[in-house]
Image 1: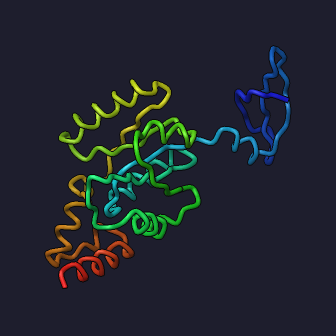
Image 2: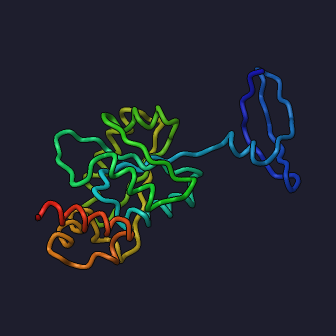
Length: 201
């Protein structure tokens, strides 16, 4: 039986009314609320290099979870760059820093819109820290729209205390012996200390 689910509304504590369309015939049925919500699962892709993930990233993820059922953190594999952490290390650290069941971590290579289609996501989540970010982000959003008009880009601004924060700055401060406790989760601080200690020895 092929059904197209159009909408739902609660009609009891554990049930919801679902409008189902089969060819030209409209049927009304009852489904448990958890099953009905699963049919409307919204996924947002949050891409980046995350070398490493910072509290600014975590703030955006938290904001994204208020809008979407699932936020997928997509770690970019870029062979032309030499990151501090490997892809495997990044994924493990992100999973430790963000233990939510509604957050999924994966790596990708190539076009972001193709990865989004593969994951059945219709939204790309991006952060805007300052005006200087806007021009680049707008160009990327417009290109992604040309490549796939069905995928939208949503821009979110972090808390003002994170408006200057970047992974590059965190690594620079850490390499010079500065305290980064307020900028990253404890697991990231530990990993940076270990990684930079080994690289300088």
